[in-house]
Amino acid sequence: MFLNYETNLKPKWYNFVTSIIEYTKLIFSKMERNQKEEVQALQDTLHVLGGKWRLPIINSICNGNHRFREIERSIPGITTRMLSRELKDMEMNMLIRRTENRDAEIPVKYESTPYCKSFGPVIEEMIKWGKLHRKEIIRKSKQ
Image (cartoon, rainbow, N blue to C red):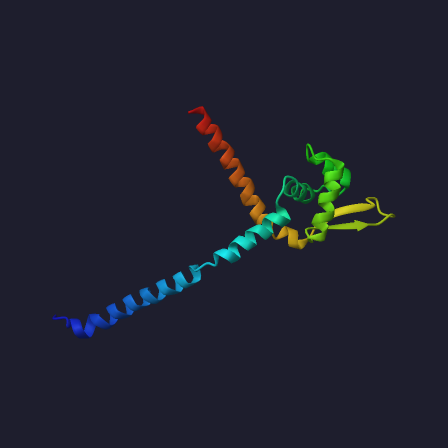
């Protein structure tokens, strides 16, 4: 059987190539990034979560430490003054909730907010990366 290139293949080939070109344009348009906006977002994140103590405090609270002394004891090296200051700042940034109930078994309780928990997957990835990084540094230092 004789195939007529003009009638049989050209429309299919043209549609295939056109769809790839359109798809590529779509992907690249989604990939366009605003560097200024990204830098601002990174700076905002580091401002709220940066520093030596914020992530360990979040980790402590998420691991069940809700009393001030429990949090303090779970983080080696943190001072009472620093913990108090960090908790106030984290409360202001809606990462934790401080509740007082003088009649309760735990009169003052600290809990992570749903907003804080939304950062959980990022923290998990940071922990994974930190473990891998430590292994890599140890491996390199033995060579």
